[in-house]
Every structure is written in structure tokens, then in C-alpha cells.
Image (cartoon, rainbow, N blue to C red):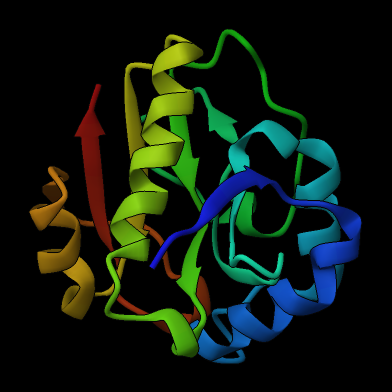
Length: 163
């Protein structure tokens, strides 16, 4: 299946929110307001995969950051990307149920890593649930252990891809 990649647009918000809720619990998922801010404040690191008919099949998004591991405030407060930040984060990587099992999640990770390299970041960093650790390890991320995050009352693992 062939996808094209570009920056999220405000008109994509409804499709993005449907996909967000397909991949995260109500407590884990971003709010519509938070996602709207992410589209506006870090468009260069909010990448959508589009089908041939321009529908959003999946997306990856995260701001740049000055710390190696995510902190919970990143989920609630969005600020513009800083060109001097050494790290690229991932707050959400979600593929629509209709397009799962086609390698799209890995392709989105690759697209964001490509942007991070062009912006001279040192690494891509994210947190994930234990059941997702093997997926990220398969894509070159290293498991750095349990995160200090208590986002949505879950246990998260720090995953880092050194660039």
C-alpha cells in the first residue's frame, strides 16, 4: 500500500482525533484542544500519512525537547519547536485500524527520524506501554527502562533511537 507523507493541517483534526481514540484509552488520548495546538505549534514534526484519496491513514507527532526523556507536562502544554533542542519526542504514533499491518507505523517512525536528522537532533525519544516495547526495539529503539511518567496512571517505558 502506498502512502504520501506531509504536515498535518487544521482540516485534518477530525480524522486525527478519530485515529487518536482508536489507539489510546480515553485517559491516554490527547484532547482535541491539545491536538489543535500541536498542529499549529510544531507542524514540521507532525507528520501524517495519506491515502491515495488524501485521507489520513496514520500520524506521528511530538515536539523537540531539551531533555533525553519525556516529562508529563509535554502532554498538556504545547510550545513551538526550538531549533537548538537536542531531542525529538514522540507523543503519539497511531495508525488507523483500516491500515494496520502494512508497515505504516515503522514508515512514520522513519519519516520523523529523517526530519530529526535534518534538524541535527541527537536522538528520538518516546514512552510506550510494555506491550509496545518489542515494536520499537524492532525499529532500532533502545529500552531505557521504566519512565518516571505516570501519564494516565500507566507504567511507561523510555525508548530512545540514537541518530
